Length: 298
Image 1: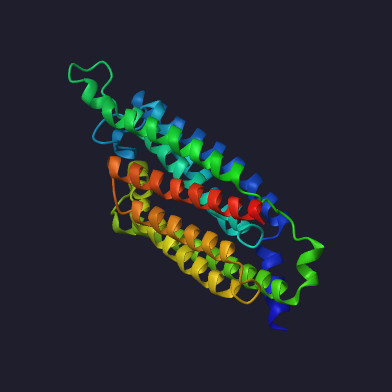
Image 2: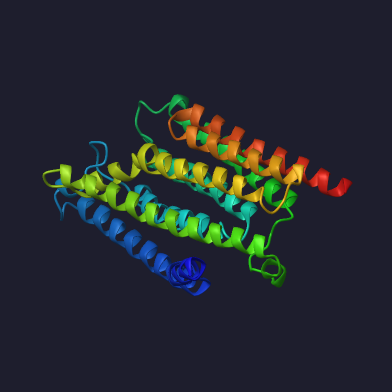
């Protein structure tokens, strides 16, 4: 009865059909918010709307700042994919976490580019230092993520018949489905909480909304990755019921450490954040490589 209830809830909110529906909604929402943001920037710069509708660091907003909005929508969808792939593949589940931090870095690059004092006498190489660090870190992160997927042989995206032939493994899959539902509920709660912060502003403008989004790294992502860590530890303990293979235990333990490092990175800023992210993904790649060597040896 309990298993049937979990499966029913899971199929309602995290089925492949629901994923396709959300994918379409994200596509249209990203375009819509992008166009709205562009319209606001143009109207303010043409002085059709007062600057009070949208302040951007005390300056008039520029078109580059509009790229931040659709990337935020895409980033939220990537978080949904982390939850979606948990019951299918632990590798894709972790890889999606790496994709999330990649998008965070890309989004911050656009924000830094929009804030560059181009044409100003104060523009120096010092202004470009942060962007150069971000470019270099992004290149390393994307390469390491590619290596992680390349090394991994756990690319199952559908439940095979073998899953259902083992009662213990099937229960393990049901547990992962149940945890996915819990994570989705937590994701929606944290998202609603982040939006509710706008109530603290007397008359919030579009710039205030962007400020809230930019501070989400510390609250939203840190809290959500805490939940991911607890989820991975629980799954590691459950795995003992279906497998005592040393390499699988080491792999999943290593993946937990990688997620912990990612979580800690959200408490930092600047180059420290970039270094922490690179270390987290590098550790995941090393663990995947060691796991693959174990498999080849067998």
